[in-house]
Amino acid sequence: MQARRLGSRTVGWGLVAAAVFVIALVLVTWKATSPLLFLLYPVLVLGVLALLAMAVLWALKHF
Amino acid sequence: MVTWSQGAEDERRTEQSKVTIRWIVVTIALAAVAYMRRTGTVDTPWTVIIGLTVVIAALNLGFSFVLRRGAGSPRGVLRWLRYLTTGSDLAMISVLVGYSGGSASPFYYVYFIVLVSNAVRYGMAMAIFVALAYNVAYVGVLLARPATDLTIEGAKILAFWGVALYAGYLAARFQRQARILQAYEETILSLRARLGERGGPGGSV
Image 1 (cartoon, rainbow over the protein chains, first blue to last red):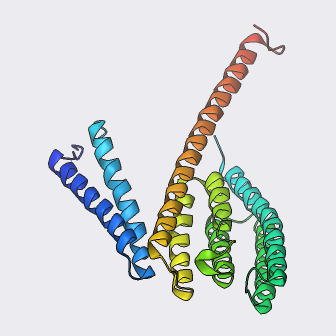
Image 2 (cartoon, each protein chain N blue to C red):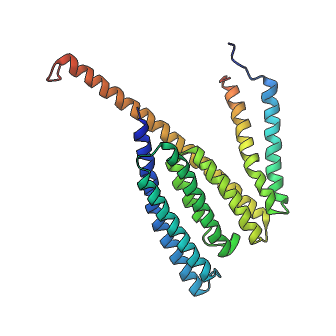
């Protein structure tokens, strides 16, 4: 069975998504009008980390 | 290799030590609240102070009981217990923070004790769990006691996430090093045993 490979396009879109998440983090922190918006933090923080980890592992030819 | 029962025993000991630490931290924190209430630094109602003391004492006794009774039980029981104890700790701290000034509470930093002590013991997964539970609980505190500047509160939550992820990363590194060390020890022991077999009863070649 052939191993699934991650394409450079997927990684590129992942990095774009990570950048969007970082901007969203800054905006939520800066312009929050309700504490409920802080509930987005787990998704955004873990999303950025996961996407960056994917890009780093791809750059290191892990997959 | 770490056996199943050895892992369960390690986990039981870890949780038992958390019970002891909880008694110490709770005694100090609640004594501090009572003192600050008397001096007028915080406006926490006495009913809340007494209620928290009773609930935390009951929970801690309950955890102690489960740990003693569950010493030989399947490891799964202990696996969820660690999340239950940590979640209840964070919930109790949130009640204390909420009733002692909300975002301006002097007890805010107690969250970090729970974070560091659990992350060091259990690693990255627990660090993320603590950050997640804290995030939700602190939003609850902010809803109950609205803060004047939400940007600062957002930055505080993000800072907590940063500390949690860094503590989790360090714990994961320590755990990996401990595993490598253990593998070395096992190799040395097996080599010694082989040498002993070759060299006869005396063990020398």
